[in-house]
Image 1: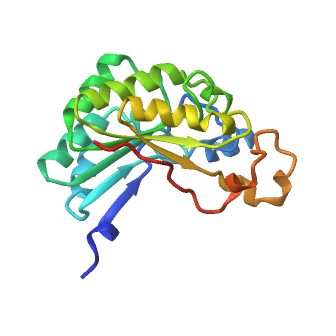
Image 2: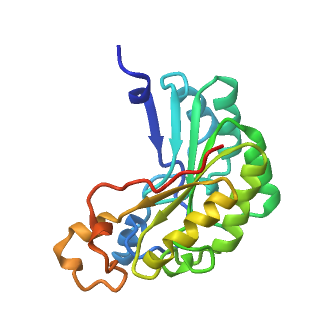
Image 3: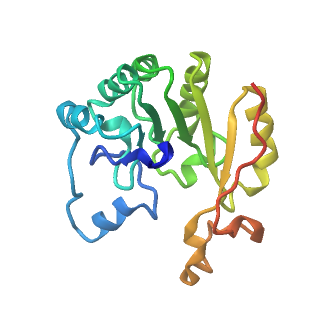
Length: 214
């Protein structure tokens, strides 16, 4: 029998993102003048797909899942069919009313928020992101009983703020996950100004920082 965790499906459910993170695959397409491939997954498509997997991870290489107009319906379907669901997001361009509705659609879903650094500085990598707003939406999710993970990719501008971020996570009972970027594995990136000074952040495997106890 195939283990349950191997029967989950990772999906890139949209073609839209308001961020302009420099090393994103989306930016590679745009710089080449190419059209972003794919489209928005429909409710009918997802409903059929949900019959074949035990859970879903909504994330993106070319999009952010919050921009699929059907995401809230997908979360409801997962709840109704008892499928696990996780949403990986870094974009902040939705009104608070939408965020609240999305969280309420499936309180069993896990949300991972990509805020690289302290909220006020995360835009240095996540171009166009309002990190402080997104952090507040993470707190809103937490207040509703949602499992939240704060994903923090370590860069030169935030490597000295990790302890402060950990204290902030503990204060709000959030899980803080520190990650290294795979871009440092490319020898051509030796002079990248975003590269951390401390070599332990260059490791191939991402690792988790201390997590708060519930």
